Image (cartoon, rainbow, N blue to C red; front, side, top):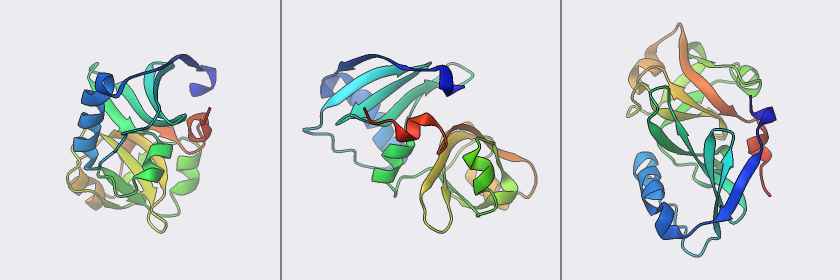
Length: 169
């Protein structure tokens, strides 16, 4: 998927031009990005739009199947904001599968943010270290995901093995 993509049309952007995008992200994940003084850039990466803060890809803007726009932190961004909402915790048995880009099955889910709704972007973290492993579309709400035992819970979109994890240009 992303192996054929490349960063294109990278350009500096003023904070006021992307303020609504960042505000939406802050409200959704219950964080404070505090980008004052940061060097901000936007670029295209395949069908996604990326926001770089001080030359590191921190946020991604993408569309779902219904062509609705969503904004979320990249895995690098989640490392800077570990207390972000919309998390799913998985056990160590699920990690090897997630590292290869597999969708997340609910059998590996140990806990989930109860405020997650079906169809939202969520991030997956390991239950011990709380480090981000992947980002994906939630196929169930948070309470249902934590209590279910069979089926798929998250359609993985971006994972630790992806080249975006290392993206720092």
